[in-house]
Image (cartoon, rainbow, N blue to C red):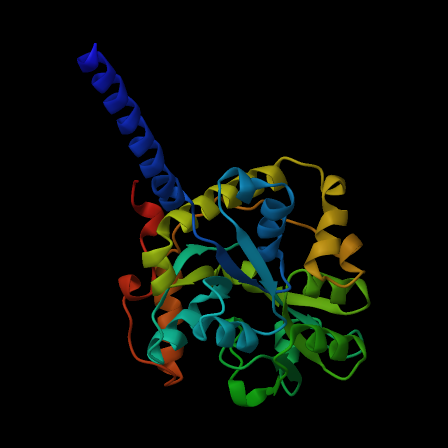
Length: 314
């Protein structure tokens, strides 16, 4: 009888110990929060949809989305540790690494960057840019696309005048008010400008370049890998939703959460998004070539700039 009592008591004690030991394990499985910087462009939309439709929650990851108006502000927040990752571009990755900040691109994005001319600027084709002002943000994807447009059309940089306006909304406003001849803008800002009297001239889509990426600090990739993978699963759900849902079903939500100007509601035309994947080798090589040609940074390999996180099976 005593042996049976001791056996039962021991079993109960073991169960209690197992129960107590289970709680820390559950806490260890909880995914770390991610803080992601967004820009006022169409690359932000899958993140907005993932947040508002609960896709991040479904994947068990908390994601805070922080809006920025300029690449400079975004990059400062990333390098100060206030962000885990951000919608960015390959140029920003190169400059960050050149400055000693450990960061990698983890996937491409699908945004377009277009050159739009003022309605009365007398610019209807790239050749008309000679002698005109073009508003850009210095040492960013915007200037990179601008230089590619000039090169493809045989225009030397000295034949135009670059006006540095870092904040995208200000660049748009100055173009619309007639204070600029032309500007390079991300979507939907370029479409907003065109809808209000400006003229689309050319853009990154026509050039076949795609330097936009999502980036994460190396510290976050190492410490929050599971969270980043969960974020991408939610991102891909949002992409699937956007590609298979009528625009009317989500445009009000996008306008409410994105900070896009009101005219974007009618002007915005989304092309199909791709599920997350690694940046193309050619896009990386062309971005590196550009920074080297301007003596802005040294040489970097694909692996120096791109994390293989999405290519690794888990």
